[in-house]
Image (tube, rainbow, N blue to C red; front, side, top):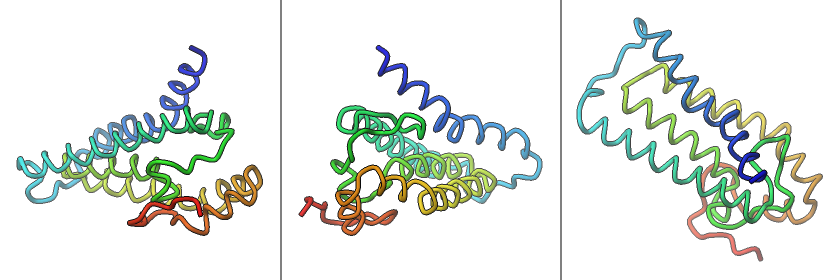
Length: 168
């Protein structure tokens, strides 16, 4: 039960704020100036937006479950994994959880036709890229040593490799 609560807390404090609270605030606060792009009210835009949000949510949920089962930790920096997670989507790309969150944000931008939510998606990716370069990756190298350096050398940060890395 305690592990479940740790995961819920980390999800509510991080991704929920990024994917639900901030976009809702942006849509409300910038409603007058957030010009909608053409076709944003079409069923194609809505459908594509929903598909992207669901794909991102599925990827995110998969990653959270791998952090719990394989990594024995959470997505929160204050409660990190105890073991390196290099299975499932992590065999294709080093940051699939962030990719899932970015997909949800892009899906929301498409669904609402919102430039401001699209801009937030870009800012989110930029913030995470900077965080990973300056903090996350050096921290993972300190915690997991050579096994992380080998993983990092074979699995790209953001653009997935087509063939899964098998852990030479």
